[in-house]
Length: 65
Image (cartoon, rainbow, N blue to C red; front, side, top):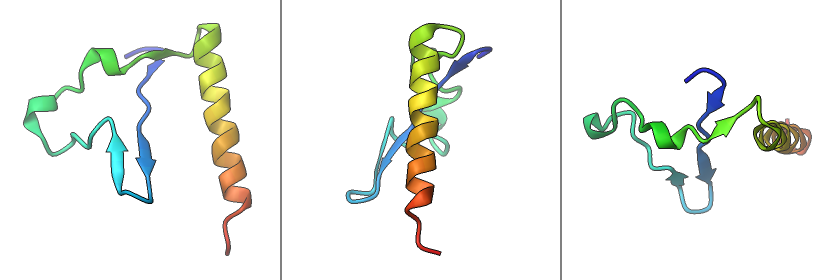
């Protein structure tokens, strides 16, 4: 989808993924275009991607090895 990203969120406490896990469901192939709602060339898209990178970095710092 060019410069657009589709983000998934997994809640470990409930085991739920949003949007739902669609990889095995032929009804959702290809993944709907409206899910690709983050354009990294736009300010809000860049901020969303940077926030995700920060979140992942912070989560990795707190991993127990």
